[in-house]
Image (tube, rainbow, N blue to C red):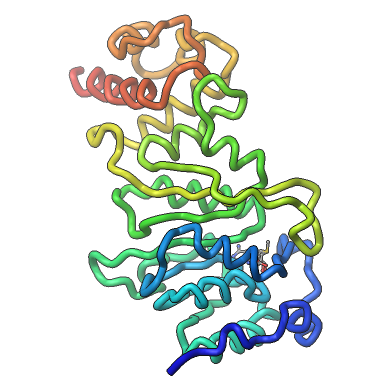
Amino acid sequence: MSDSINDLSPLRDVISRHDLRAKKSFGQNFLLDLNLTARIARVPGDITNAHIYEVGPGPGGLTRGLLAEGAKSVTAVEMDSRCLPALAEINEASNGRLTVIEGNALDMDEPSLMGLKPGETAHIVANLPYNVGTQLLIKWMTLESWLPWYSSLSLMFQREVADRIVAAPGSKAYGRLSVLVQWRAKAKIAVKVPAAAFTPAPKVNSAVVHIVPTEPMNPDVKLRDLEQLVARAFGQRRKMLRASLKGLDVAAIELLERAEIEPTARAEEISVEDFVRMARHYRLILDAR
Ligand code: SAM
């Protein structure tokens, strides 16, 4: 049975019919241009027959795009109950491929919510309020089990955060987020979205970042060790590492020498590989005690 996603009424009509005026408290800035949402829905690649996890569908512009691109299922978590009737219409038009859960995405155990079977993965796609987006990114990038349950993330961020995620060493944007993402994923800016594309328009521009998990640069590195080193090093990013890494339970100079990193280098100058090698030596020094 063919579906009728493309016959649904324009989003402006949906919004007025269901009285979905954007609320600041939910961080709502809607995308109403279905060409743009279709473009974002293609960021994960070919999603025909794929399972999708969407956060914050709102009136459903991006959700429609995902279903029109052929997703096998879309599981969407939305906090604002006012959106549910509009989303129910989309479910009907898609032959029941959309499941909506009312709740806070920060509390969800996604694989069990989606009923993923062992070995099955999903793509995560979301246009989120910015504060929630960063929290979710950190949640999804700090999972212990890797490769994770998702095969890609396509997430909207304010442009400045997007730049931090994909930044290379030596740039102002390079920092904690860059290392936490890039040590075990490939990240790139996929779509630049001007503020005017949203209703209402936020103050800043945005971008969709596409992140694909990879094998970690070093499978023996413990995430906790890397996080600790990165937090310290970038906590005082202008200082030399021999100073910013003081206070760890290994001597900064010994660690830097073992990892073959100049003690006078600064956090913003060293590569993701350097951080990973440092985290490995940190653990080796501790284990040898
Ligand atoms: N995806 C829609 C679009 O592109 O037009 C809506 C985007 S709007 C920026 C963010 C959506 O996320 C809103 O519908 C809001 O109600 C929802 N939301 C905000 N915080 C949430 C949370 N913690 N969990 C789930 N949904 C949330």
